[in-house]
Image 1 (tube, rainbow over the protein chains, first blue to last red):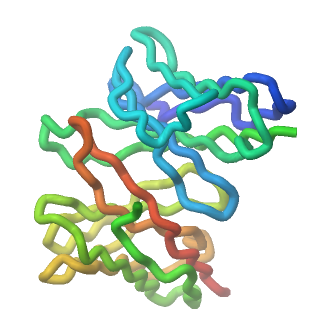
Image 2 (cartoon, rainbow over the protein chains, first blue to last red):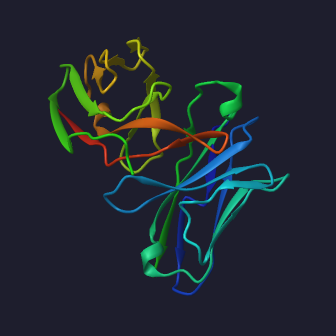
Length: 118
Length: 112
């Protein structure tokens, strides 16, 4: 029973290049969340997706960042024209159900992708 | 903005109980308190959660005050492997699911 899988674990990009971060949720989970963690800081919420839909992107920068969770395949966080300030750890989490089910299941986090922009 | 406040750091002797406090004075009646920890730079790991009653599992105990404005995570016999950043989180309903708003956490160092 694999957990949340993120790849790559480490990604180095030059300024101006594109970064693609992938997240495969736990089997059966249809809710995916992306968080960003700058060095020595806590995790900051970026975006919440369900299959094929972006539900809440209030934490995602308006420019250069986009996210998707297609019907088939992993969720993708894409950063275009990366800058040094994008260097951070990006974590993905998934959950089984949403609020309507009245459950208290927590998030399961992946091991993260560490993006370094040089 | 985080709805919780925690001390930035704590030390604990190996084998002793580690008591990590958290204030969440603006918590609403149906909002749960969750605790996660992050070892080195790994992904956060779930520890425990509760609403109003005290909770215990194989990892820790969670004591929530009667007014629910604060809670304490207890690691009964801390080991060196428990050295980590511990996050107290209030789970906030959002867009049909829940949003976890992380604060800066407490950096626990277990000393040999």
